[in-house]
Amino acid sequence: MATSLLTRAFTALRPIRPAFPYFCEPSRSFRSVGHATKETLLLFFTIVAFLCPSSIRANYVGENGNCKLFAVPSAGFGKCNSTATTGLGVAASSGIHSLPSSDPVVSADWLHANLKEPDVKVLDASWYMPNEQRNPLQEYQQVAHIPGALFFDVDGISDRSSNLPHMLPSEEAFSAAVSALGIYNKDGIIVYDGKGIFSAARVWWMFRAFGHGRVWVLDGGLPQWRSSGYDVESSASSNSILKANAAREAVEKVYSGQPVGPTTFEAKLQPHLLWNLDQIKENMDLLSHQHIDARAKARFDGVAPEPRKGLRAGHVPNSKCIPFTQVLDSSQMLLPASELRKKFEDEGISLDRPVVTSCGTGVTACVLALGLHRLGKTDVPIYDGSWTEWGGHADAPVAVNTA
Image: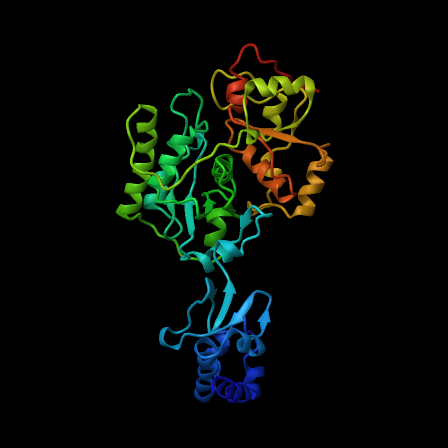
């Protein structure tokens, strides 16, 4: 019965196939076909989706890349077997499972297509330098954010026992904060910021440092999202504001010894991704890792003052400078792998040897780590204290370039 109906429908479909050329994104074509054609298509996809066993479907439902055809006429066209559809009856592999683990970024188009997937959580991790005088939480609440995104407070979700800015918190504090945001270990995290690729890379690294590999950065961030023509929300829901506040409060409770509620996310620190001052000192002599500084060249050379008062100018001896902006294009998107490779190699970095990165406060060092991840170097540690710690330690040696 099913085979007979499918054969009849498929036979009727053959003559109109040329009028339906884009099976992976067919919504525009579908609107242009006639009523009889639509009825034939509906019959065909209905039989495929509901009557035929998989062995029969395989004979009639072709694949184009990751695209498979099916339909749910009672609900327009939907999804099946955890795959999402675009337009008429096309299910593309979607959600976090469709992302390659080898690349650390996703496109605005991918995020838009998967924004409502239940296993996709989006975080606005915007953060700005103090001299920029921008309030990221206020901008999230009152200016613009990606629909459904939650705010991740880079300064708030940090080590409260340290006098250094936004240092990595404890496992317990991170678990409590991320749980307060409603995130589970099974979730895939997409992080973005208001500049393009800046502080989002820091939060990407934080999740990885706590053992969560299912995390990506939105390539080009909020600017790229908006330039792609996608909608933003100009006000935050009360629920999202409550979650942002709850995350900050959870961290405060952990560091003050107060109990926190049940957690949905368990952090597991990966020590090899986190370096401290003593390890940097040791590496000056051993040179087990190539040390790359992501700050601007003038700061690295010691000819420009540090933005934070009381810090000496210069750099860690035997380190090299690759400003984080050099791994991004003019749209603040991550450079292609071929260009990244050339950039690092031109600066004398051997991609066959280990690398550690640093910057001013451990933010833009993560942008370099993001670029190196694209090149297959997935184990790059961050010197968390970075120059704010090193430049403030009287016994930490400093080199300058005066030539």
